[in-house]
Image 1 (spheres, helix red, strand yellow):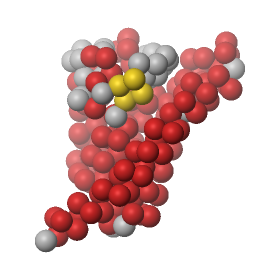
Image 2 (image 1 turned 135 degrees about the vertical axis):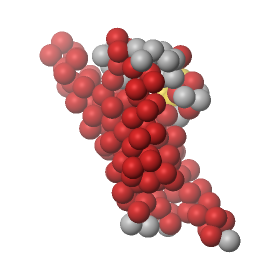
Image 3 (image 1 turned 60 degrees about the vertical axis):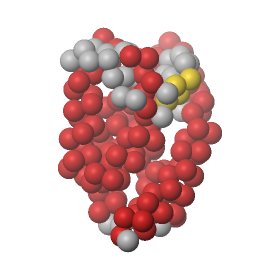
Image 4 (image 1 turned 90 degrees about the horizontal axis):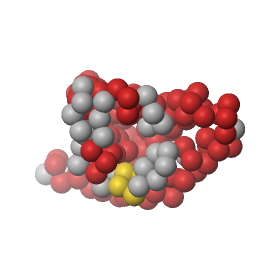
Length: 159
């Protein structure tokens, strides 16, 4: 929830640190605990607890432009956990690949939902611009940060 409130307000989807938090939680907690954690987060928000970006919550919020991304968080955390189980998070290249796969999973859910909401009126180019392209630089920075930090953390933990 803290990562949701570190944000740059944009419409229809704000820039936040949520994806970084979601993906690193999945890598650190593993498939089951990562999935349960993110399903719990989404369930809290759906139930009205203000855990989403801008202290937002509720099913009405989830039915808006960010809904697909929120559902994608759980799938991405599960994927990250499954890939971490294979040891991919132990190297910079492996972690970068994991972050890329996790981010792509979030986009798959988010863009699918946004296209359902907006493509008929605004077109698919608009959906891609406002649902993905605007976030690519930030996503690349998060990928590099995780690739540099997470393998080092694992080396410290092993000591």
